[in-house]
Length: 148
Image (tube, rainbow, N blue to C red; front, side):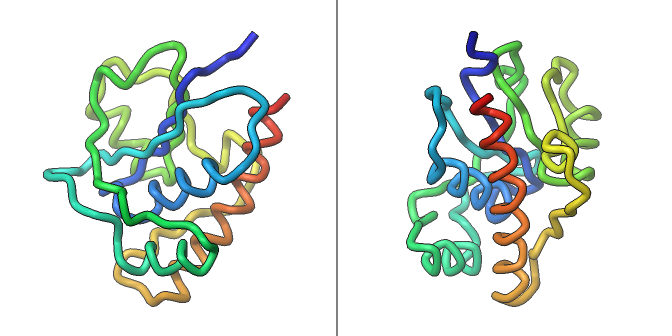
């Protein structure tokens, strides 16, 4: 039986790490259909993806050009939705700000990894590339779990 129908990657602003994770997972083969998206815990308006995140995705022949930041809502939490926070700060904000929070995990913990996702905000293109590489590794492990 399918455990989840939807997976949401949650980051701070939903302009770089979350959208990167979403796009990477969408490019993978999953045995069952899964709605994949990203949202942020601090989103005031629907801004586009960070240009450096978009540049990294283009290097991997993918795109974030249609992405617009979206805020996490109370209605996003239910028993059929898996919420994966990309870092401890985002996970903490979820538990502080959403009383219905359920099925919330730190991505690295969920896949039993010690790899840490460093938010590249304000960093160089190389920092965004390094973030992509860590996300690619973690999401490859996630795909194995989701396909079990």
